[in-house]
Length: 611
Ligand code: GDP
Image 1 (cartoon, rainbow, N blue to C red):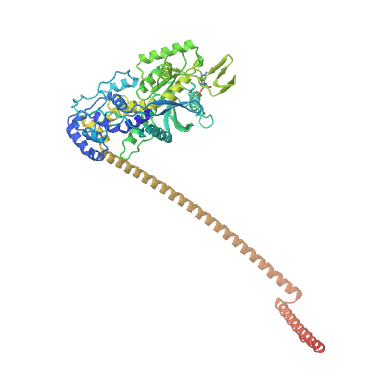
Image 2 (image 1 turned 135 degrees about the horizontal axis):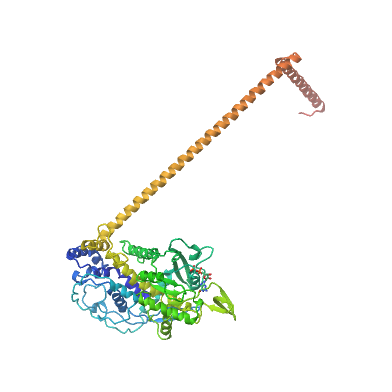
């Protein structure tokens, strides 16, 4: 399993590189003593490996040694045995079950403590000549100042291998790593570049057997064609047998679609580098995460039109410019439009031109750790580059089989048939066997190159990057190194960033506050006006009512006067008369009641009933 060595390599990556990229400049001693001062705390806490190396023990090395050093470091890690584990759906995934019995010497018998070098030097010094990965050439390009002679370091004895009497349990370590990795999930960023209509979205959907590009929610790049090249990302979470893959698809709608395509690669270069920049920033923070999110572009599928006439100038230009920044895998789109012979010739032509123009494409390593048939299959699939692919979103039923393919009157072009196209080879190589290698190469070659260029103050074309005051003079170099490797300067930088952020937030909040106050005031004014309007309306209504009442009062008075005149009576007379009548009725009623009472008492006396 490569992830174990990968994680170990990654953890120790940042600091050892410091010693290897030390600039050989005039006031080096002064710089070194300053750096030692800053790293002292690291040494005390045991965190800094390179800090404990004496200044002379860290010779600057050109970036071309980077990959060697990384591979040496990997070589020192125990080689896990890989077994293929066939999942329920028939997909072979690798589970490492290391049965190595190598143990390090116990501390008592260990050699006397020596300053720990950045790279374990127990590995044999003579490098084994291996075929150069295309990306290795890139690192040889950069020129560096002369290297100081490497002083003799005290030799560290190679720990002896001891046989164990029984099962201890650390053989289970790869399983722990496996479980942790599965729990954490995986991230992969795939970029697709090519003119619109070459079948990019169809191929992505076919690769992941799902509608990554959904016509309604997320149309393919050609349905989003722009006047200028845009870079857009879409993230999908894929789950297969409990393993989560966060897949980020980066597409570039508008690429190669303009009349004048000069510089249409620039937004893509900027995007790729911005992701490296993000990662570098996340990695070099004082308070950094153990594993910052990896949004770097791990693979770029470059779609070549099936013209049969070799590469177009735009293809050459793009691959030349991006080849040392990202893993390019060239694919011939719509391979079903060519006969097998045409396809073979076209492939040869493309590979010839790739060689002629010194284009660096991703070089699938021959060995993937598999042995026997697995290795042979890898070898045969590797020979199919550039992959001539066919994409299809439709599944056709034929002879009881469900086939993904394109149906024509003369037959079916099957997507997953190696005799029809290289789709299966591409999918196997990119997803099943080389996904981790693509990530590793991105991390240890392309990203390291970027980082190196960045630290050396070079721009992406390898020329000195001249910023305000940090020119590529020794002092400028020193400043850039000091800024990146000096924790205090970094803290200062982060504090400045933080202050800026706070200021920005404050001004934003102030703006929001002002806007809210303005809104509230406007609302208050509105409600005030509304109240005044209502008050005025009510006042008018009341006045109208009062006027009406006056009217009615006047009418009533007139009516009364007329009535008094007609009857010769006044209202007062009427009132008096009615009062008199009332009082008379009251007196009569009382007398009647008294009489009734008397009658009752007489009756009760006569009958002898007491009431
Ligand atoms: P994009 O713009 O590159 O994303 O292209 P699309 O995936 O939208 O495909 C454009 C057209 O080409 C659609 O009509 C597809 O059905 C068709 N297409 C996709 N892949 C293939 C292929 O492998 N062969 C052929 N002949 N047509 C294809």
